[in-house]
Length: 263
Image (tube, rainbow, N blue to C red; front, top):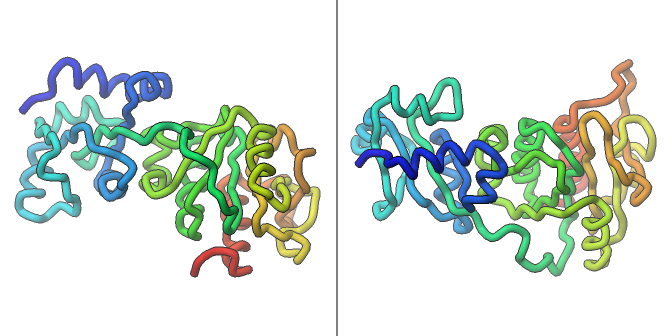
C-alpha cells in the first residue's frame, strides 16, 4: 500500500495547530511516542506509516511497537519517509491519531491531589517536559490556557515522550476562566509560581493540596497573578529565574516529597 494524495496532504496539515484542529487528527512520530499513543484508550489510530526496514523489524519481532492488526499500516521507502517526517533523524514510524473531543468532558468531581495549570507557556519543549514530569509524579490531568504551546504538536509530543496520551488535557481561554472552574470545585486556593517573590516552596505554608498550581509564560510570567498567592523557589545564586520546565519540576517534586501524590 502506498500513501495516496489525500494522506500526504493530511500529513502536511498536521504540522500546524490550525491543521490539527481542522482535521481532528494529530501526528505522533518515533517508536516510544507511538507506543504510548497506541496504549492509550483515548486515542484511536487512523493509520500508521513506516519504512520497509521498520516493517521488516516488526515482522521479525525486533521493533518495540505493537501496531493493531486491523490498523492501516503503510510501508514506504526510507527516502520517501524522510520527506514526510517531522524529525531530522527519523526512527522510521509515525502514527496519525484521532484524539478525544477537546475539553467537553465534565470537570473532575474531586481535586486530588491538586491541579497543574500552564498559563501561556509558549515553548513546545517546556510544555512537553512539564507534561512528562506531571505524569511521572502521578497527576492525571493538566489544564492550560490559550497561548500555551499545543500539547499535541509533534514537537511537544516528542518532548513529553508521549506523556500526553496518558493524561487528561483541558483548555481554557485564560487564567481567570480556569480559576473560576477551580473555584466551582471547591478549591482551597491558587498558587502562582514567581521567580523571586512569595512564600518559599519549601515553607510549610505552601499548602498545595486541593489547590491550583500555575506555571507562567517564559518571558512574561503569569498574566493574572493577583488571582492567587505567590510561591517561589529559593535561588541563592545570581540567576534571575529558572527555566519554566525546571521550575515546574522542582515544585512538582516537592509535592511528591510531601506525599501529596501516589508513590
